[in-house]
Amino acid sequence: MQGSQNGNAMSPTGTDLAGQAGARSSTGGVDHGRARGPGVGGRPDTRPTGPLLLVDIDGVLNIFGAWIPAEGHWTDGWGHRRRRFVAPDHLREAQAAGYSLLLDPDHPGMFGQLEPLFEIHWATMWMDRASEFGSVAGFGVDWPFIDFDAMRRTASRSHLRIGAGVGSYKEPGIVATLGERPGIWIDDDMSDEQMDWARMRTEAGVPTLFLRPDPAEGMTRRHFDRVMAFAEEQLAVPS
Image (tube, rainbow, N blue to C red):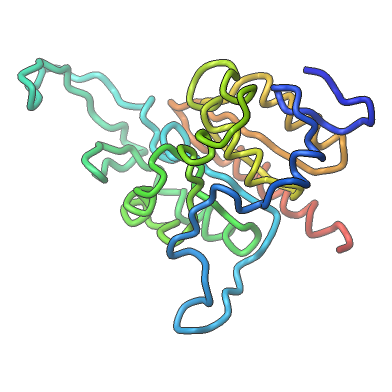
């Protein structure tokens, strides 16, 4: 990870943050769907315009790493024998888009407090199906989603070579959506280089927080407290 000569933060690919952000719309590659427009019933959309909160589903809100192995097996639709798993007592089992989910009953209350403070976007490979998850989880049905596939098609060649994993696939969309605005990204699959980029971006004057939960725990009260503290810091900054 290198800084630019003028002190601006760089992406893990060596991209000058300030230059890239200035050239991109903060909504580039974001499908606002039902989440934007004139508002409900023709009323103005009064949701906050910043800071941003970009939220993954699997490993953050769908706590897939917490399933507990159980006795017995089952046979899937292709005839494969699968081991049985059960949900831990503190999580709720649900179904959405054909997937079995493990949900934290505390999350709806957490996001009920966060929604007035942030402009929240789905940052998940569920993309246009994220609202299906939201309808089951109890929040986020009308949040816009980042179209990572579209952003990937238009990303620079250097972005296409970033590391490995879903977090690297998402990076062009995350960087473009953040633009020059303060923001948080919560995802269980991001690289150390991306975490470093967030710290460098903050040092360059754009408050940024990347949180990487354990998929066996998901977004915990500890993460929520850090997000709330970030929001309070932003509210304390004179506009």
